[in-house]
Image (cartoon, rainbow, N blue to C red; front, side):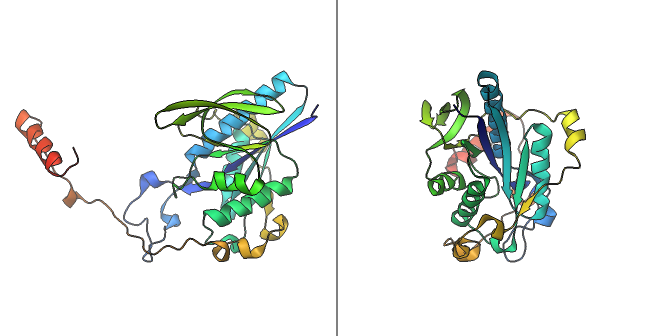
Length: 273
């Protein structure tokens, strides 16, 4: 019988893409992160809730110690989302930060995260969001599972059952749902339709607000340095175009039958309808 159960949450601090304006892009086509507020990636927040629910169930049904550890890779200020996770119930967390991670694509990112997870030692289940809103690739979670050589369940929507040996989840597909069970350890990517994360706990905010968030550099995770950053990233961006809608691209229609009929005709002619 296991004496402890380790849950890992992979989270990312991302620019708030809902507030993209004319200053959101630099001249070279990269994101001007200084012009956008940084937030906890929404799908990762859902993953945090599923991790906390998993911990609650394991604790209630088994006499073992359960920990939820959050890992994020990014600049030092990414410790803000680790602290946010602590306020909501996570037990501890780490920031993986180093200039040598710069220009990482999903392949290099998943490699760095897998090495950080291995540094923790043993783990039972890894939760992460289905995708990040600044990239929308949905690749990092599955690639991390491959590098850890563990089973993966993607698009998880609901935690059905969990015990120290197995986990069963409902997953959302294009034409329906599936219920999938796998042995642990495993990695789970959580769909954006999953349960919202619980609110901050006032006593945790008071207790954790001055907690020092440990930071790991590339040296701490003992990687193959040729697989990090731009050097380890085969993905190359050929061109980025910044498209910002302006008032010139908007139209005003009358709310009468004639105006609505004209709008429908325009949408049909443009093959939008």
